[in-house]
Image (cartoon, rainbow, N blue to C red; front, side, top):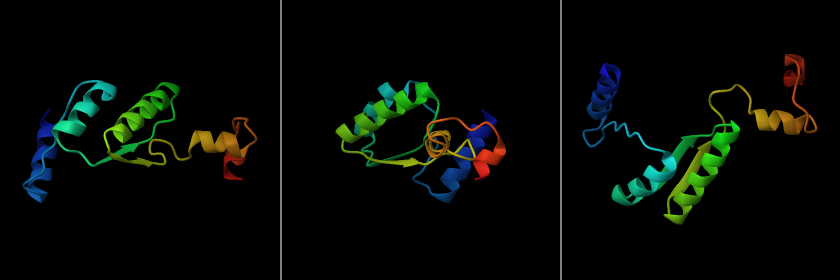
Length: 103
């Protein structure tokens, strides 16, 4: 909790109108409420490649677009390479060694 408080204070120090909010609820249910309440115009998020996350992200993107929110998704973040792109680049087969990835 101290880390979150410190982060929020640092954000506010950079911009008096900004603050860190930590909200606990499924993004599929909370984001549509926040789009409206906070008049959100853009949504930026880190794309996840896990199967459950792909479904969740697709739902959130659809909800955002319905709310008139522009969606900007990063390519990937927690992996060095996008696993979907690697499989695609290797004819639909997963890579089995680092040498295959480096090609």
